[in-house]
Length: 283
Image 1 (cartoon, one colour):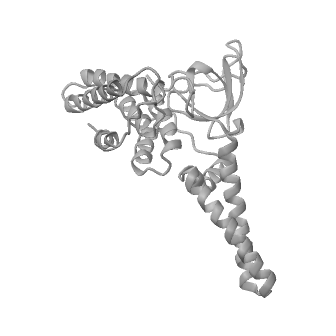
Image 2: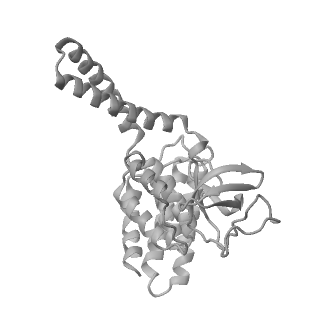
Image 3: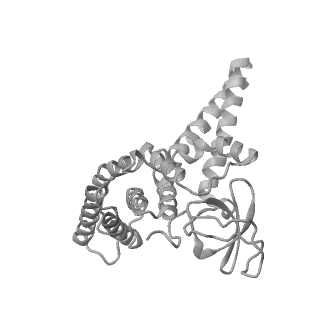
């Protein structure tokens, strides 16, 4: 077992223990059934870890079984960052790299800034066969938006509300006192207030202009148009785990932009979109 895989095997149980099973979260499963499925998933995962070194083929079967149970609960309505995190762990151990990265990214939207999740996601990304260096513009944008992605909407909303109040107080102080410190404080609060407003607003609007996805298949031929008749965009096919931005959809095809700013078309069944309620959430 590699060091990365060992770390992943250690991270499932602590987060699993804090998952809250709410009786109203699943439409067809009773509370007892939900708890039983969680216990079975945990047992399968632990069994897979215990035999991973001596019997990796059999261990993979246990990881796939655990993933199926976690996915069952998610599909029944338990939209829970912990479950998605555990699902991704099981998928990664089972060798389903694309689905693992997809569900780590989905879990990240519900557990922003979680150190264990980010560590596992980084490790999973290091296993990809295709590694793209972000273009200068994309790399700069990612750096600027890093705080946005790794902080919760609730936290940013609270800070936004505080900045709103402080801005008006400092503006009043500037109008009354007419001194430099009040002016600079007011301008600083206005800038921070505006940045946070854009950040919060973008989450609330959930615009399709920034939808992202992950390839979940191997040997994906990226084409120059939305059909099998179009020529390949690249000399070699791409493989699972590649992340991209969605440009547009046309029937069974999606137009994507890769981290290096290259674009092309792939079939919708070769990728999963980040966000709850999307297809291809699991195994």
